[in-house]
Length: 253
Ligand SMILES: NC(=O)c1ccc[n+]([C@@H]2O[C@H](COP(=O)([O-])OP(=O)(O)OC[C@H]3O[C@@H](n4cnc5c(N)ncnc54)[C@H](O)[C@@H]3O)[C@@H](O)[C@H]2O)c1
Image (tube, rainbow, N blue to C red):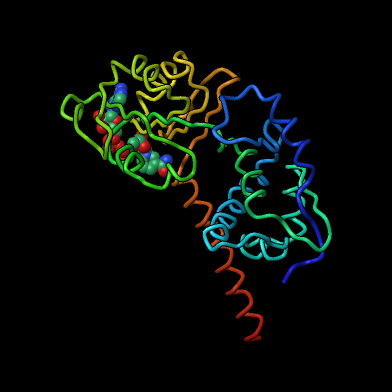
């Protein structure tokens, strides 16, 4: 059922906006929302909307109401409408969202229509698992290089990639055109490698190393820490147990 609301905003305005972007050349046209500041929580939800829209596209669904999309993404529709407003998507009553267009709009805002070429430094358990993961390609990330320092590991193949010696980091980054890096190395070598990546012109780094990395302001570093996530889960699980026990105690009184 189509809800009474929105459809995308002016396509021409969005294309004008893209024309001013100084990002790497897009691999598809459009660039809605590119360069706009989007709050982190909305940014995280946009990735969820994109996943839901991709599933709809795969099912041949062309139009969707905000209620339907909100339900598929597990949020309420006012929040979804607010999030999409950061892309300039306000909508027209009674028509719903154009699924391919909205999907392109979100992809453009997230920078996913750009050609991201990822280098992974550290070909241990994590680096190999990431390099072999088939889901990155379909989401706009191509793994183009994998490095390690261990002579026993260098030269081995992971999928179609051959592990390069980290001594050749700068040369291989330049040759492959890598513009994003993942650090999956021990903490004690992470800062040195981070510095080398930055000196090679990499400005987007995802780090798994359990250490705080220093980098110039123009460099974006995202740190993944599963232990922290588990601790947060444990905190919520504990709170929910405590409130269940309290509720049972109240009932027993
Ligand atoms: N954030 C998380 O949730 C999470 C989870 C698991 C592991 N980790 C961290 O991720 C990192 C990798 O974990 P792992 O299990 O893959 O470890 P691993 O020991 O299996 O792999 C590390 C690899 O880095 C290589 N290496 C060491 N020094 C190097 C250098 N100077 N240049 C290039 N490569 C070098 C090693 O030869 C090895 O192959 C560790 O720091 C670990 O603590 C984080």
